[in-house]
Image 1 (cartoon, rainbow, N blue to C red):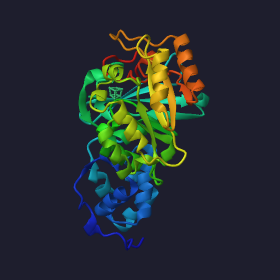
Image 2 (image 1 turned 30 degrees about the vertical axis):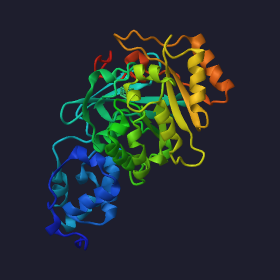
Image 3 (image 1 turned 45 degrees about the vertical axis):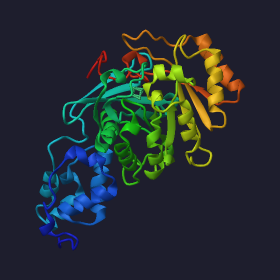
Image 4 (image 1 turned 120 degrees about the vertical axis):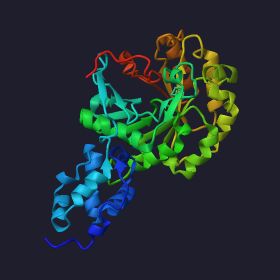
Length: 378
Ligand code: SF4
């Protein structure tokens, strides 16, 4: 076969080696540039390799017919590409444990070991009876926001995740379970706005039409309200994805006691900043409210929430607290939940009551963290 005119053996191995796990953090343009730097060739070759990375979570250019063909015209191509991405496995996990939730059957908590041995957790959640799945991913190892109802808070911030480690959680889930999630929420370990550059880079990769092709409207970033980062959401093109705010109290003294972030950016600052966001037409903000027995589930608390929400295009997610070991806080009782919900509805506030999934294996909202291991591992 004649040598491909776009191939030059002089190009081979010019790039410094990368870790295989890093490939998961590249959108197609960057990946194509990297491939071209190593081995030249037309972007259609790169596209085939990118589909392998994003579709199969593997880096094995020698298994692709196109690249084997290229090898005939330019010997050494496959070896150069293979060697250019070395060391860690694809996807970025080097170990994984999975638990099937005995109560809800298919909710799966996935622990991924990162290249440095740290662990990070994500949860794959069936929706509409398993018609499709949502993956809840982590953006940090641990978290420094200190919310009192959250297991992750107890870890403190251990380190930031790179974009490749965020996307790697999706690849890990897909490879391990055979399920490619349709929806993705940044509601796992960490505060996404505390690691915004990596989150923005991951969103670029997740929505890349050459790769995972998640719809931006199926992605949600959840924040406790790092107001200082709000202007960057627009700069980084992140207003095209959904924004959720974890509120859990609409009165400052109470919110500060539950969520220390409120001592820096209080409720009126947060409300003003949310009101100033240029959301796409028709887009609602999601407001998460964790209901804690005797703490924030009273009629007065519901009234305060209605007042705070006034004029904001918001959908409220009510989440009865998921208990964590060693925490005296308890979930709001069903009558209090019903009354709270009814009060919001009566005031014209759209409300959803979140069905808790995964709490049996510490995989529910606020329960991610490595303090307790799941019961059955494989
Ligand atoms: S709820 Fe979110 S922001 Fe708060 S401590 Fe937990 S992980 Fe961090």
